[in-house]
Structure formats: structure tokens, C-alpha cells
Amino acid sequence: MSDSLAPVAGDAGPQVPQSGRKRELLIVLGCLVAMLAGGFGAAGIFQPSASSSDRDRSSASGDRAFAQLEQADAARLKAVQDLLRIRSQAILHHDRRAFVSTLDPKSAAFRLNQKQMFGSLKRVHFASWSYTLGGTGAQAPAAARRRYRAPTWIPVDLHVHYRLTGFDKQPTNLPQYPTFVERSGHWYLASLTDLRHEHSATDIWDYAPVHVIRRHDVLVLGPKEELATMALVADQAQAAIPRVSAVWGRDWARRVVIIVPSTQREMAEITDDHQNLNHIAALTSSEFTITGAGRAPVGDRVTINPTNWPTFGTLGASIVITHELTHVATRAQTGTQTPKWLSEGFADYVGFREAGVPTSLVAAELSGRIHSGHPVRQLPSDRAFRGGATLLPEAYESSWLACRYLAEHYSQGKLVRFYRAVGASDAERHQAITTALRRVFGLRPQEFLSAWRGYVTAQLG
Ligand SMILES: [Zn+2]
Image (cartoon, rainbow, N blue to C red; front, side, top):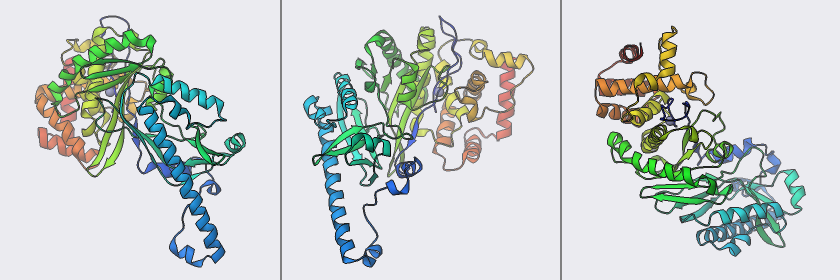
């Protein structure tokens, strides 16, 4: 799922083929495994409890030692939980003093960085802020321990959850990899970056003071120097919401949070997307939490690529935003069995639907390739949508035409039903698509492929 689109015919500026993808963090089960795989030797993993049969075999002195260990462990856990509560409340209530009291007094650079981050949050309103903390953990890596010269603890599992007021219905679920240190009987937060292989999630406020632009259903966060872009993006997104609902229906949030970072590098870090972003206009991202009802997307964000954005004219930007908002709308009905040709083709279908751009212009690269003797054969694979893929524009264009064919030849409503049917399927991809094609259109896969080829040739040949 991602974003972005076939080359856009902007009304100004060069055409930039776009694409993107979303961050998908499967968080709930992943942490312990990730930690073990991330370079911690077995000796570094703290074992807080043992099975009852193990304990039966241990000596009386072993029991005492174990009890002491458990006590110390419980005390540390409580101290860190208290620290995180103070930090949460301090952020919620803009209490700088309380916030600073949780930071390691001897980690000067980290304190400075954290104070700047806290200041950057001044204009951001949170409905909630909290952490979930796992009880087990490890020592900090050896180099960090030497630096702290104090007892350290890195929990195996820490996530930050926050809701932006008026926008996030469910809290985000973002991994953090902190180091806590104990000094004179008190625990403090000393770092979020000690682990080489695990990166704490970052947000726009980790980079610069955040400014906020609000429209009725749109919240845009970015730095001061991007205020003009932020205002344009906010207006375009507000206008795009009904365009998306007109196709998809109204069963989505119909509200959106958009991030405008200062640089492409910041964009990569915030979205945790380190593919080649040079041709990407914007990205949608979200995390998933596992609920009783299954996977639920949370923390939906659209992040603008500040490097490419200025190359779009009004029309191009509006198409990109509509495309991205389509990903936000369809997120909960997009599964791992949903092929990218469908999620990207559908987002482009909605994006271009009312744009009035001639087909030959939207699909210029595909048209050129067909005219040079390379007719379309198969729908593009997921790999064809990677940022650095050589035929990236063609992948978007041919997928767009696949979705447009289904909407034109059958109906837009059936295209939407098809998308939902694939996303709701429990089957693997091929079976999910085959079943949905048959149920919604009465088509076999080969019939669909050959109809799509004919349509592409008729449109561009
Ligand atoms: Zn996309």
C-alpha cells in the first residue's frame, strides 16, 4: 500500500513519477525476536523468572538469591514505569520541569536533544500519551555501559502510544529502544539510540519546532519554513476527502494527518522507509495493532516528500493527495494478499478520475514502451513498485488502466466490491484474486488478463 502515482501531469513543472509505500509494523509479536536477533548475546538477556520445576531443584541459598533478584527486578520495573508516567504527563500538560526530571543528569547531549524535542511539541495537542513496557530486558551494549559507568537497563518491549487531538481515534503504536540508567538509587532515561540494529521511531517533532495548520478535517504538521507548502497541502487534502468518499464510500475516518518534513532524509526516518525516495511524491504509513477483531491500522499518516513537492503544479499535487488519501481510506481493507497493482491502481483510479488528464499523458511511459515493441503481458509484481525499480512509472500506469478497465467495463461499484473482497479474503493472494474476480465480475484470471491487454492496446496503441 503506498502511495503514489503514475507520473502526474502537473500544470507546471516537470513530471515526476511517484510512488511510495507504507510502513507496516507488525509490532505485537516482533519485539523479543527482533531484540534477540539484534546482536544481544545470551549473556546480555536478563532472565527475570524461572519455571517452578527449575526452582524446585535449586538450593535454599539459590532461592534467597533468586528472591532478591526478583525484588530488585520488580523495584526497577516500578521505578521505570513511574518515570514513564511522569514523562507522559509532562508531555500531555507541557510541564517542562517534570519532563527534564526524567532525563539522565550525566547524558548532556541527550538532555539537550530531548529538551529541544520537548520545545518542538509546544503547538501540538495530544489527547493521550502513554507507554507500554515489557518486564524483561537487557544490559546496554558494552560501549554504552562504559560510557554510563552506572547500572543500565534496556527493556525488550517499549512502545509509545499517543493520539493527536481530534484526529487519532486509536493511539499510535511506535517502538522505542531506550536505555535507562540508575544513579544514586534513581532510574533515568539516558538514550533512545544505543542499539545499532534497532531504531526508535521518530516523529516530526524530533527534528524541528512543529507548526500546525488545521482545516476542518485535515491536520498538517511541519517546520516553519514549510508553512506555505503546508497551507496548500491542507487545502488540497480537504478538497480530496469527498473525492475519495465518492468512490470508496464513507466508512473511513474522513480525516487525515499530513506531515511535511524539511528534507527527504527526515521523510525516510519518520516513515521508516529507506528505499530510494527520489521519485516518490508522498508516502502513507501506519502501524498495526492486533485487536480481538484482527489487525487494526493505527497512526495513519501521509508524509510529503519536500524535495519533489515543489515540482508539482496544483493539479499534480491534488492528484497525489487524492491518491494518498485513497490509501488511508482503504487501509483497513487492504491485506497482505492485496497485490500492489490493485492498491496502487485503485489509488490512481481515484486520483485521476476527475482530473481531466488525457490517458496518453498519464500513461506516457507505458505508451512509449508499447510503441517501441513491448506490449503488456502480465500485471506488475509488487517488486515493480519499489522506489528504484526501472519500470516504476509503467507499473503504476498499467495498474491504473487495469482498475479503470474494471470500472468502465463493469462499474465503479464493482471495482470497489472487488477491492474489498480481495482485502477481506483469508486465502493466499492468487486464490483471493481468483475468487473475487469470479464472484464480482464472473471472470477467470486469464480472461481478465486478456481483456486488460486489449484495453491497454485500445487506449494507447
Ligand atoms: Zn500509492
